[in-house]
Length: 441
Image (tube, rainbow, N blue to C red; front, side):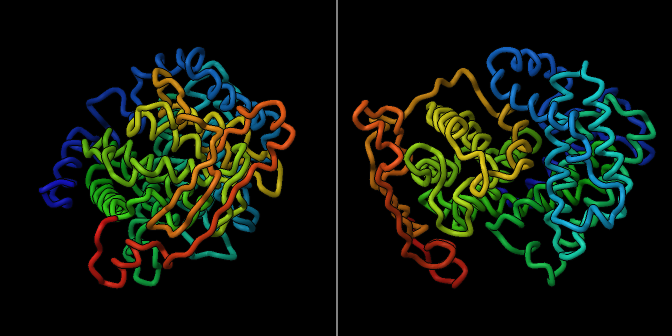
Protein backbone atom coordinates (compact mmCIF):
# COMPACT_ATOMS: atom_id res chain seq x y z
CA UNK A 1 0.00 0.00 0.00
CA UNK A 2 2.93 2.34 0.64
CA UNK A 3 6.07 2.79 -1.51
CA UNK A 4 8.23 3.18 1.59
CA UNK A 5 9.33 -0.09 3.19
CA UNK A 6 6.94 -0.95 5.97
CA UNK A 7 9.72 -1.45 8.52
CA UNK A 8 11.06 2.04 7.84
CA UNK A 9 7.58 3.57 7.99
CA UNK A 10 6.93 1.87 11.31
CA UNK A 11 10.14 3.22 12.82
CA UNK A 12 9.30 6.76 11.71
CA UNK A 13 5.76 6.70 13.09
CA UNK A 14 6.77 5.00 16.32
CA UNK A 15 9.55 7.53 16.86
CA UNK A 16 6.98 10.30 16.54
CA UNK A 17 4.66 8.52 18.95
CA UNK A 18 7.29 7.86 21.59
CA UNK A 19 9.31 11.07 21.34
CA UNK A 20 7.52 12.52 24.34
CA UNK A 21 7.22 9.47 26.57
CA UNK A 22 8.53 9.32 30.07
CA UNK A 23 11.87 8.28 31.43
CA UNK A 24 12.51 4.91 33.06
CA UNK A 25 11.57 6.15 36.52
CA UNK A 26 8.07 7.08 35.37
CA UNK A 27 8.42 10.88 35.53
CA UNK A 28 7.02 12.96 32.69
CA UNK A 29 6.62 16.52 31.55
CA UNK A 30 3.08 15.75 30.46
CA UNK A 31 0.33 15.78 33.02
CA UNK A 32 -1.99 13.30 31.32
CA UNK A 33 -0.51 10.07 29.96
CA UNK A 34 -3.79 8.21 29.81
CA UNK A 35 -6.30 7.55 28.41
CA UNK A 36 -4.90 7.60 24.91
CA UNK A 37 -5.45 4.19 23.28
CA UNK A 38 -8.90 4.91 21.81
CA UNK A 39 -9.59 8.42 23.10
CA UNK A 40 -8.06 11.21 25.19
CA UNK A 41 -9.22 12.76 28.44
CA UNK A 42 -10.78 15.71 26.61
CA UNK A 43 -13.00 13.25 24.70
CA UNK A 44 -14.59 11.76 27.82
CA UNK A 45 -17.36 14.40 28.26
CA UNK A 46 -18.37 13.81 24.63
CA UNK A 47 -18.48 10.04 25.20
CA UNK A 48 -20.60 10.52 28.32
CA UNK A 49 -23.02 12.75 26.43
CA UNK A 50 -23.31 10.17 23.66
CA UNK A 51 -24.09 7.53 26.27
CA UNK A 52 -27.12 9.61 27.25
CA UNK A 53 -28.24 10.27 23.68
CA UNK A 54 -27.17 8.77 20.35
CA UNK A 55 -25.37 5.78 21.89
CA UNK A 56 -27.85 5.11 24.69
CA UNK A 57 -28.76 1.61 23.47
CA UNK A 58 -25.13 0.47 23.52
CA UNK A 59 -24.50 2.26 26.82
CA UNK A 60 -27.44 0.42 28.35
CA UNK A 61 -25.92 -2.94 27.46
CA UNK A 62 -22.61 -1.82 28.97
CA UNK A 63 -24.46 -0.75 32.11
CA UNK A 64 -26.36 -4.04 32.37
CA UNK A 65 -23.11 -5.97 32.10
CA UNK A 66 -21.50 -3.86 34.83
CA UNK A 67 -24.52 -4.17 37.13
CA UNK A 68 -24.45 -7.95 36.74
CA UNK A 69 -20.76 -8.04 37.65
CA UNK A 70 -21.30 -5.79 40.66
CA UNK A 71 -24.15 -7.95 41.94
CA UNK A 72 -22.29 -11.25 41.48
CA UNK A 73 -18.59 -10.34 41.61
CA UNK A 74 -17.41 -13.83 42.52
CA UNK A 75 -18.79 -15.13 39.23
CA UNK A 76 -16.57 -12.75 37.28
CA UNK A 77 -13.44 -11.90 39.26
CA UNK A 78 -10.25 -13.86 38.59
CA UNK A 79 -9.54 -16.39 41.37
CA UNK A 80 -6.84 -15.43 43.85
CA UNK A 81 -5.08 -18.79 43.53
CA UNK A 82 -3.25 -19.62 40.31
CA UNK A 83 -4.22 -23.28 40.63
CA UNK A 84 -7.88 -22.38 40.29
CA UNK A 85 -7.28 -19.61 37.74
CA UNK A 86 -5.32 -21.99 35.51
CA UNK A 87 -7.66 -24.96 35.91
CA UNK A 88 -9.86 -23.87 33.01
CA UNK A 89 -9.68 -21.79 29.84
CA UNK A 90 -9.47 -18.29 31.30
CA UNK A 91 -9.72 -15.74 28.47
CA UNK A 92 -12.96 -14.53 30.03
CA UNK A 93 -11.32 -12.49 32.80
CA UNK A 94 -9.59 -10.04 30.46
CA UNK A 95 -12.82 -9.80 28.48
CA UNK A 96 -14.89 -8.93 31.55
CA UNK A 97 -12.34 -6.40 32.75
CA UNK A 98 -12.48 -4.37 29.55
CA UNK A 99 -16.25 -4.02 29.79
CA UNK A 100 -16.37 -2.86 33.40
CA UNK A 101 -13.41 -0.49 32.88
CA UNK A 102 -15.16 1.29 30.02
CA UNK A 103 -18.35 1.46 32.07
CA UNK A 104 -16.31 3.40 34.64
CA UNK A 105 -15.29 5.89 31.94
CA UNK A 106 -18.94 6.56 31.13
CA UNK A 107 -20.07 6.50 34.77
CA UNK A 108 -17.27 7.95 36.95
CA UNK A 109 -19.66 8.45 39.86
CA UNK A 110 -20.10 4.69 40.31
CA UNK A 111 -17.51 4.05 43.01
CA UNK A 112 -18.45 0.39 43.43
CA UNK A 113 -17.78 -0.29 39.75
CA UNK A 114 -14.41 1.44 39.96
CA UNK A 115 -13.47 -0.63 43.00
CA UNK A 116 -14.52 -3.79 41.18
CA UNK A 117 -12.43 -2.93 38.12
CA UNK A 118 -9.38 -2.22 40.25
CA UNK A 119 -9.92 -5.46 42.16
CA UNK A 120 -9.90 -7.25 38.79
CA UNK A 121 -6.52 -5.68 38.08
CA UNK A 122 -5.20 -6.46 41.56
CA UNK A 123 -6.14 -10.12 41.16
CA UNK A 124 -4.49 -10.38 37.74
CA UNK A 125 -1.38 -8.55 38.90
CA UNK A 126 -0.94 -10.90 41.86
CA UNK A 127 -1.03 -14.07 39.76
CA UNK A 128 2.38 -15.50 38.76
CA UNK A 129 1.20 -15.93 35.16
CA UNK A 130 -2.01 -15.95 33.13
CA UNK A 131 -1.71 -19.39 31.56
CA UNK A 132 -3.93 -22.46 31.51
CA UNK A 133 -2.30 -25.41 33.21
CA UNK A 134 -3.58 -28.06 30.78
CA UNK A 135 -2.40 -26.08 27.73
CA UNK A 136 0.47 -24.23 29.32
CA UNK A 137 2.20 -23.20 26.10
CA UNK A 138 -0.92 -21.68 24.54
CA UNK A 139 -0.53 -17.90 24.51
CA UNK A 140 -4.12 -16.99 23.59
CA UNK A 141 -5.53 -16.82 27.15
CA UNK A 142 -2.50 -14.74 28.14
CA UNK A 143 -3.24 -12.40 25.25
CA UNK A 144 -6.83 -11.89 26.37
CA UNK A 145 -5.73 -11.06 29.91
CA UNK A 146 -3.04 -8.69 28.63
CA UNK A 147 -5.44 -6.88 26.31
CA UNK A 148 -7.94 -6.48 29.14
CA UNK A 149 -5.32 -5.39 31.66
CA UNK A 150 -3.61 -2.88 29.36
CA UNK A 151 -6.90 -1.42 28.13
CA UNK A 152 -8.24 -1.08 31.68
CA UNK A 153 -4.97 0.53 32.77
CA UNK A 154 -5.38 3.11 30.02
CA UNK A 155 -9.04 3.76 30.86
CA UNK A 156 -8.59 3.93 34.65
CA UNK A 157 -5.12 5.46 34.97
CA UNK A 158 -6.37 8.74 36.42
CA UNK A 159 -8.20 6.83 39.17
CA UNK A 160 -5.28 4.64 40.23
CA UNK A 161 -2.92 5.61 43.01
CA UNK A 162 0.80 5.79 42.31
CA UNK A 163 1.53 2.37 43.79
CA UNK A 164 -1.12 0.74 41.63
CA UNK A 165 0.17 2.53 38.54
CA UNK A 166 3.68 1.23 39.10
CA UNK A 167 2.67 -2.34 39.94
CA UNK A 168 0.15 -2.74 37.13
CA UNK A 169 2.53 -1.22 34.58
CA UNK A 170 5.26 -3.61 35.68
CA UNK A 171 2.94 -6.55 35.07
CA UNK A 172 1.83 -5.25 31.67
CA UNK A 173 5.47 -4.69 30.72
CA UNK A 174 6.50 -8.18 31.80
CA UNK A 175 3.72 -9.99 29.93
CA UNK A 176 4.09 -7.88 26.79
CA UNK A 177 7.80 -8.66 26.73
CA UNK A 178 7.05 -12.34 27.24
CA UNK A 179 4.65 -12.52 24.27
CA UNK A 180 7.00 -10.46 22.12
CA UNK A 181 9.87 -12.87 22.77
CA UNK A 182 7.68 -15.90 22.21
CA UNK A 183 6.59 -14.53 18.84
CA UNK A 184 10.11 -15.38 17.58
CA UNK A 185 10.06 -18.94 18.95
CA UNK A 186 10.04 -21.30 15.96
CA UNK A 187 8.38 -23.98 18.08
CA UNK A 188 5.37 -21.70 18.50
CA UNK A 189 3.72 -21.48 15.10
CA UNK A 190 1.67 -18.32 15.66
CA UNK A 191 4.59 -15.90 15.65
CA UNK A 192 5.44 -16.54 12.01
CA UNK A 193 1.97 -17.39 10.68
CA UNK A 194 -0.83 -15.31 9.18
CA UNK A 195 -4.62 -14.99 8.96
CA UNK A 196 -5.61 -17.08 11.94
CA UNK A 197 -7.37 -16.11 15.15
CA UNK A 198 -4.42 -16.91 17.43
CA UNK A 199 -2.13 -14.76 15.30
CA UNK A 200 -4.40 -11.72 15.32
CA UNK A 201 -5.29 -12.09 19.00
CA UNK A 202 -1.71 -12.45 20.22
CA UNK A 203 -0.24 -9.65 18.12
CA UNK A 204 -3.11 -7.34 19.04
CA UNK A 205 -2.32 -8.00 22.70
CA UNK A 206 1.36 -7.19 22.10
CA UNK A 207 0.41 -3.98 20.32
CA UNK A 208 -1.98 -2.90 23.08
CA UNK A 209 0.54 -3.64 25.82
CA UNK A 210 3.36 -1.99 23.89
CA UNK A 211 1.37 1.18 23.26
CA UNK A 212 0.76 1.50 27.00
CA UNK A 213 4.37 0.71 27.93
CA UNK A 214 5.71 3.15 25.35
CA UNK A 215 3.99 5.98 27.22
CA UNK A 216 6.35 5.28 30.09
CA UNK A 217 9.37 3.35 28.78
CA UNK A 218 10.31 4.28 25.25
CA UNK A 219 13.11 1.80 24.66
CA UNK A 220 11.11 -1.20 25.83
CA UNK A 221 7.85 -0.41 24.08
CA UNK A 222 9.25 0.74 20.75
CA UNK A 223 10.47 -2.57 19.35
CA UNK A 224 7.39 -4.42 20.63
CA UNK A 225 5.13 -1.97 18.81
CA UNK A 226 7.21 -2.31 15.69
CA UNK A 227 6.92 -6.11 15.69
CA UNK A 228 3.16 -6.19 16.29
CA UNK A 229 2.46 -3.39 13.81
CA UNK A 230 4.52 -5.11 11.12
CA UNK A 231 2.93 -8.54 11.56
CA UNK A 232 -0.64 -7.27 11.75
CA UNK A 233 -0.12 -5.13 8.67
CA UNK A 234 1.16 -8.18 6.80
CA UNK A 235 -2.04 -10.00 7.66
CA UNK A 236 -4.08 -7.22 6.09
CA UNK A 237 -1.83 -7.11 3.04
CA UNK A 238 -2.36 -10.84 2.51
CA UNK A 239 -6.11 -10.51 2.99
CA UNK A 240 -6.22 -8.04 0.13
CA UNK A 241 -5.71 -11.02 -2.18
CA UNK A 242 -8.97 -12.47 -0.82
CA UNK A 243 -11.35 -10.76 -3.21
CA UNK A 244 -14.63 -11.95 -1.65
CA UNK A 245 -14.06 -10.50 1.84
CA UNK A 246 -14.16 -13.92 3.49
CA UNK A 247 -12.06 -15.50 6.21
CA UNK A 248 -11.25 -19.14 5.59
CA UNK A 249 -11.83 -20.04 9.26
CA UNK A 250 -15.56 -19.53 8.76
CA UNK A 251 -17.94 -17.12 10.43
CA UNK A 252 -17.44 -18.03 14.08
CA UNK A 253 -13.65 -18.02 14.22
CA UNK A 254 -13.63 -15.40 11.49
CA UNK A 255 -15.17 -12.93 13.92
CA UNK A 256 -12.47 -13.91 16.43
CA UNK A 257 -9.89 -12.75 13.88
CA UNK A 258 -11.80 -9.68 12.65
CA UNK A 259 -12.26 -8.57 16.26
CA UNK A 260 -8.53 -7.89 16.44
CA UNK A 261 -8.07 -6.72 12.86
CA UNK A 262 -10.73 -4.01 13.01
CA UNK A 263 -9.28 -2.72 16.28
CA UNK A 264 -5.82 -2.77 14.72
CA UNK A 265 -7.00 -0.74 11.73
CA UNK A 266 -8.38 1.87 14.14
CA UNK A 267 -5.22 1.98 16.27
CA UNK A 268 -2.93 2.06 13.22
CA UNK A 269 -4.81 5.08 11.89
CA UNK A 270 -4.94 6.82 15.27
CA UNK A 271 -1.38 6.21 16.45
CA UNK A 272 0.72 5.52 13.35
CA UNK A 273 -1.23 7.47 10.70
CA UNK A 274 -1.34 4.36 8.53
CA UNK A 275 -4.68 4.07 6.74
CA UNK A 276 -6.00 0.59 5.93
CA UNK A 277 -9.62 1.66 5.62
CA UNK A 278 -9.47 1.44 1.83
CA UNK A 279 -8.44 -2.20 1.99
CA UNK A 280 -10.29 -4.19 -0.71
CA UNK A 281 -10.80 -7.00 1.76
CA UNK A 282 -12.43 -4.70 4.32
CA UNK A 283 -14.70 -3.28 1.63
CA UNK A 284 -16.00 -6.76 0.79
CA UNK A 285 -16.00 -8.11 4.34
CA UNK A 286 -19.46 -6.69 5.01
CA UNK A 287 -20.94 -9.13 2.50
CA UNK A 288 -19.22 -12.03 4.25
CA UNK A 289 -21.15 -11.11 7.40
CA UNK A 290 -24.36 -10.37 5.50
CA UNK A 291 -24.72 -13.43 3.28
CA UNK A 292 -23.64 -15.96 5.91
CA UNK A 293 -26.43 -15.13 8.36
CA UNK A 294 -29.54 -17.28 8.07
CA UNK A 295 -32.96 -15.71 7.35
CA UNK A 296 -34.19 -13.89 10.44
CA UNK A 297 -30.67 -13.05 11.71
CA UNK A 298 -30.68 -15.66 14.46
CA UNK A 299 -27.67 -17.76 13.51
CA UNK A 300 -25.02 -18.26 10.86
CA UNK A 301 -24.01 -20.83 8.29
CA UNK A 302 -22.16 -23.65 10.06
CA UNK A 303 -19.21 -23.99 7.69
CA UNK A 304 -15.94 -24.41 9.54
CA UNK A 305 -15.51 -24.87 13.29
CA UNK A 306 -18.72 -23.23 14.42
CA UNK A 307 -21.55 -23.11 16.93
CA UNK A 308 -23.65 -21.36 14.24
CA UNK A 309 -23.14 -18.08 16.05
CA UNK A 310 -20.53 -15.32 16.06
CA UNK A 311 -17.77 -15.92 18.59
CA UNK A 312 -17.02 -12.18 18.88
CA UNK A 313 -19.29 -9.38 17.74
CA UNK A 314 -20.26 -8.91 15.00
CA UNK A 315 -21.82 -5.59 16.07
CA UNK A 316 -18.46 -3.94 16.67
CA UNK A 317 -17.07 -5.08 13.33
CA UNK A 318 -20.19 -3.97 11.46
CA UNK A 319 -20.39 -0.47 12.93
CA UNK A 320 -16.65 -0.11 12.34
CA UNK A 321 -17.11 -1.02 8.68
CA UNK A 322 -19.93 1.47 8.32
CA UNK A 323 -18.08 4.32 10.00
CA UNK A 324 -14.63 3.86 8.48
CA UNK A 325 -15.11 1.91 5.25
CA UNK A 326 -18.63 1.81 3.78
CA UNK A 327 -20.42 4.88 5.18
CA UNK A 328 -23.70 3.78 3.61
CA UNK A 329 -25.82 2.56 6.56
CA UNK A 330 -25.65 -1.13 5.71
CA UNK A 331 -23.34 -2.01 8.59
CA UNK A 332 -25.42 -0.19 11.20
CA UNK A 333 -28.57 -1.83 9.85
CA UNK A 334 -27.20 -5.37 9.95
CA UNK A 335 -25.68 -4.81 13.40
CA UNK A 336 -29.11 -3.89 14.78
CA UNK A 337 -30.84 -6.83 13.07
CA UNK A 338 -28.38 -9.32 14.53
CA UNK A 339 -28.44 -7.68 17.95
CA UNK A 340 -32.23 -7.90 18.11
CA UNK A 341 -32.62 -11.43 16.77
CA UNK A 342 -29.56 -13.60 17.41
CA UNK A 343 -29.86 -16.67 19.62
CA UNK A 344 -29.15 -15.87 23.27
CA UNK A 345 -29.52 -19.33 24.81
CA UNK A 346 -27.27 -22.39 24.64
CA UNK A 347 -26.07 -24.29 22.71
CA UNK A 348 -25.79 -21.66 19.98
CA UNK A 349 -25.35 -18.56 22.13
CA UNK A 350 -22.17 -16.56 22.60
CA UNK A 351 -20.27 -17.03 25.84
CA UNK A 352 -21.10 -14.24 28.32
CA UNK A 353 -17.59 -12.75 28.15
CA UNK A 354 -17.74 -12.75 24.35
CA UNK A 355 -21.02 -10.84 24.46
CA UNK A 356 -19.65 -7.91 26.43
CA UNK A 357 -15.93 -7.60 25.73
CA UNK A 358 -16.48 -5.69 22.46
CA UNK A 359 -19.11 -3.30 23.77
CA UNK A 360 -16.50 -0.58 24.27
CA UNK A 361 -15.35 -0.76 20.65
CA UNK A 362 -18.93 -1.00 19.40
CA UNK A 363 -19.65 2.20 21.34
CA UNK A 364 -16.49 3.94 20.13
CA UNK A 365 -16.79 2.88 16.49
CA UNK A 366 -20.52 3.58 16.10
CA UNK A 367 -21.41 6.68 14.10
CA UNK A 368 -25.02 7.66 14.76
CA UNK A 369 -25.00 10.18 11.91
CA UNK A 370 -24.87 7.31 9.41
CA UNK A 371 -28.50 6.31 9.13
CA UNK A 372 -29.34 2.63 8.95
CA UNK A 373 -30.18 1.41 5.49
CA UNK A 374 -31.12 -2.03 4.25
CA UNK A 375 -30.20 -3.07 0.74
CA UNK A 376 -33.13 -2.91 -1.74
CA UNK A 377 -35.75 -5.62 -1.24
CA UNK A 378 -34.22 -7.04 1.95
CA UNK A 379 -36.78 -9.86 2.12
CA UNK A 380 -35.78 -11.12 -1.35
CA UNK A 381 -33.53 -14.22 -1.24
CA UNK A 382 -30.30 -13.85 -3.21
CA UNK A 383 -27.64 -16.22 -4.46
CA UNK A 384 -24.15 -15.17 -3.38
CA UNK A 385 -20.87 -16.75 -4.44
CA UNK A 386 -17.77 -16.44 -2.27
CA UNK A 387 -15.33 -17.12 -5.08
CA UNK A 388 -12.23 -17.37 -2.91
CA UNK A 389 -13.73 -19.20 0.06
CA UNK A 390 -15.46 -21.66 -2.26
CA UNK A 391 -18.86 -21.21 -0.64
CA UNK A 392 -22.25 -20.47 -2.18
CA UNK A 393 -25.24 -19.30 -0.13
CA UNK A 394 -28.85 -18.70 -1.08
CA UNK A 395 -31.14 -16.74 1.24
CA UNK A 396 -28.45 -15.24 3.46
CA UNK A 397 -29.30 -11.98 5.22
CA UNK A 398 -33.01 -12.16 4.41
CA UNK A 399 -35.18 -9.91 6.57
CA UNK A 400 -38.18 -12.07 7.51
CA UNK A 401 -39.88 -9.26 9.45
CA UNK A 402 -41.03 -7.69 6.18
CA UNK A 403 -43.10 -10.66 5.05
CA UNK A 404 -46.87 -10.28 4.73
CA UNK A 405 -49.34 -11.80 7.20
CA UNK A 406 -49.76 -15.03 5.23
CA UNK A 407 -46.03 -15.57 5.16
CA UNK A 408 -45.36 -14.70 8.80
CA UNK A 409 -46.59 -18.05 10.06
CA UNK A 410 -43.87 -19.71 8.00
CA UNK A 411 -41.08 -17.22 8.39
CA UNK A 412 -38.97 -19.62 10.47
CA UNK A 413 -39.02 -21.98 7.46
CA UNK A 414 -37.59 -19.56 4.91
CA UNK A 415 -35.28 -21.32 2.48
CA UNK A 416 -31.55 -21.14 3.06
CA UNK A 417 -29.04 -23.20 1.11
CA UNK A 418 -25.28 -23.34 1.33
CA UNK A 419 -22.45 -25.55 0.21
CA UNK A 420 -18.67 -25.43 0.10
CA UNK A 421 -16.45 -26.75 -2.65
CA UNK A 422 -13.01 -25.20 -2.56
CA UNK A 423 -9.38 -25.61 -1.61
CA UNK A 424 -8.20 -25.49 1.98
CA UNK A 425 -7.67 -21.94 3.31
CA UNK A 426 -9.28 -20.37 0.25
CA UNK A 427 -8.02 -19.95 -3.29
CA UNK A 428 -5.72 -16.95 -2.87
CA UNK A 429 -3.93 -18.02 0.31
CA UNK A 430 -3.65 -21.61 -0.91
CA UNK A 431 -1.95 -20.31 -4.04
CA UNK A 432 0.41 -18.07 -2.07
CA UNK A 433 1.38 -20.88 0.32
CA UNK A 434 2.10 -23.24 -2.57
CA UNK A 435 4.29 -20.63 -4.19
CA UNK A 436 2.26 -20.28 -7.34
CA UNK A 437 1.27 -17.15 -9.16
CA UNK A 438 -2.09 -15.72 -8.19
CA UNK A 439 -4.40 -13.69 -10.36
CA UNK A 440 -7.18 -11.62 -8.79
CA UNK A 441 -10.73 -12.60 -9.65
